[in-house]
Amino acid sequence: MPACTKAAVSGGRPTHLIRLPVVLARTGKSRSTLYREVAAGTFPRGVRIGDNAVAWVEAEVADWIAARIAVRDKEVA
Image (cartoon, rainbow, N blue to C red; front, top):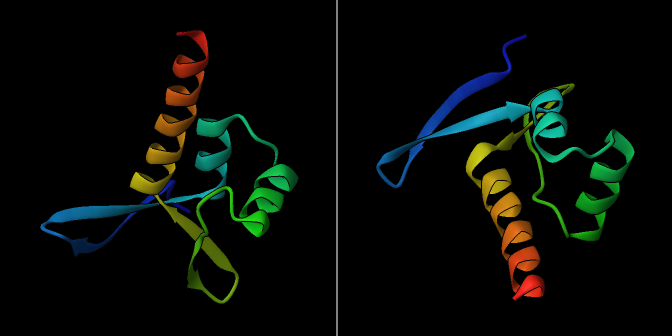
């Protein structure tokens, strides 16, 4: 399966969906931690792309990562 799938265009820019292995690699999280945080509402929810397939909006994951960096930088300042 491809690691990145092009989805519909949203707001004039392409929206990409990324599968679980890519999300885990980008965040450094384990699968169980990721799903626990999704359930708690502290990580973006996935998008069902098939009967047994879920992907995440790449921009939402990138925004989540940027927010974590902003929190870190605020703590240092």
